[in-house]
Length: 184
Image (cartoon, rainbow, N blue to C red; front, side):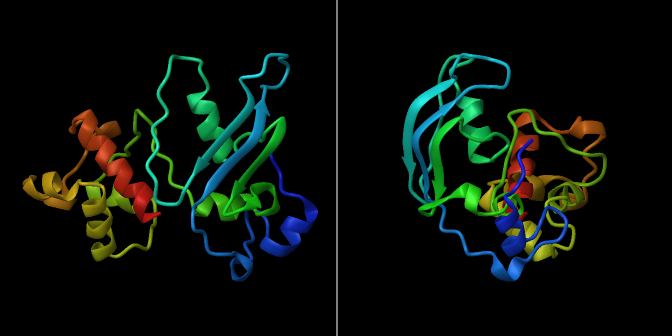
């Protein structure tokens, strides 16, 4: 249901045809300003007058009970949903004034239970950037703290992960997913 406004599409392009020459660089400051949100066909706000400021480079953890809004906050930042009321800004600009493509190009999203594909570790990391060089794969792996365990494997980056990554531990799969998000 989330679509860009006509003027945003004119400037930045749509989901399939990007006008990357108009894409501004991102610093990464995120601000929730009196954000309220409720899911469609409900009357109950999941968030109400929620305010949050995250500075670029800060690490933030969302901790709470099931149903407390943690995933909703992440889904709002990712613009999978938009606020019912209030605004979300990135670098001081309402994120609805930028394209979904610009936002998604600048975000990495790692699920709690990562999904790997049959193939090698290298191929799974490169899924985030299909034309990545081996140097980029290694750099992303080092940033994700995955390089050390990968290097200890008999075939290193050419190790087959098995169906859904079943030859790796959950922690190893998560590190590979982090590297994939970083390289993307």
